[in-house]
Image (cartoon, rainbow, N blue to C red; front, top):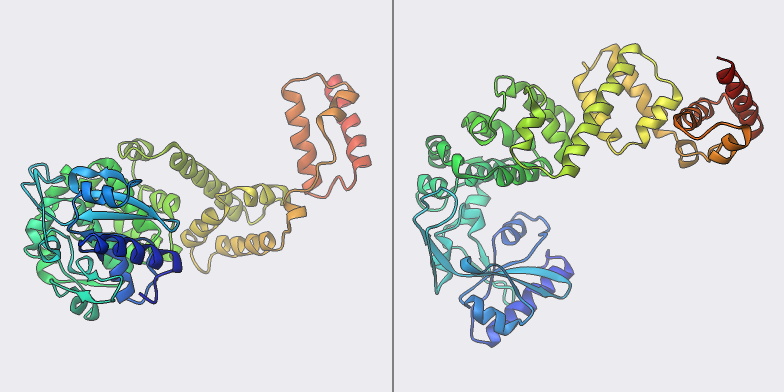
Length: 412
């Protein structure tokens, strides 16, 4: 438990201690144990127990049942929200998504059989650091292997999302997929039809913020599951998109990952909408595409005005747009050289240059006699452009420009 961050480790120990005081079992399980085995820092706490949801609630009155029928309760403790789940067995996945029957179990060994991969079926005692490894997951990790628990084809047909999780874990953890598990994945691709668009979106978005997202996508392309997971996706150029993602580098990020994946797909916005993304993600992607197009247009021209560059750098899409543009341009091209020049100029800008105090304000336009309306915004934007480009170096010069500009517009 030494690598568990202080709050996570304390929460795991104290929750387990409370359950043990009630003569119940408690094991840290899943991603946290896997990460500890790999020398990584866990990010969350999942505990498995033989306590039923009612017993968990009695031990922790403030616990909330987010998946009570499946035995999952959220327990807030020591500033950490832990997921505490009753041992269970599952059967009858008629929709390739949810079990038809769930039976609460009495042992971690039984619980391990319903988990997806052996690396996620590791159980660690938070109080004694005893490891329970019923599926030889630790040996698989030591060999760099990702292997399904039990019969792999059954695991994938139980829940088609495991096809995507297979690729995410293989890529992010740098594991090679065990041959029988890989063959079972190829034979089970139709199971993805039972997975909702929201779950597909969430799983791939998680992949995009993990290391080696391109490797994960390459695996999904190899088993031919992506066109089934994302209706309307053009997979004919996926190798090119995967290579572009690899050039962008890790972590790719959610908005940039989806932008690259759907770049060659017609009606990409409609394809994405079928996965039910948030409005915020849709806005980020739209902003990123627009910033990238603008940046690449200037790169082809070999020049960008300082005002245009400043406005691009102000955007939240700036870094991703620059990463995408640099990855798209050939290494020895004039466009790439221009982009590197833009990057150097942008890196040298300080906050006062990015967001200088405007020389002109609305009251200045009113005093000159500009009537309220669209012209206010036009004049203020033009004044800012001249200020950012260094043409208007003082407030006095800006006021002088405003008087001339408004007089010229009135006469026109």
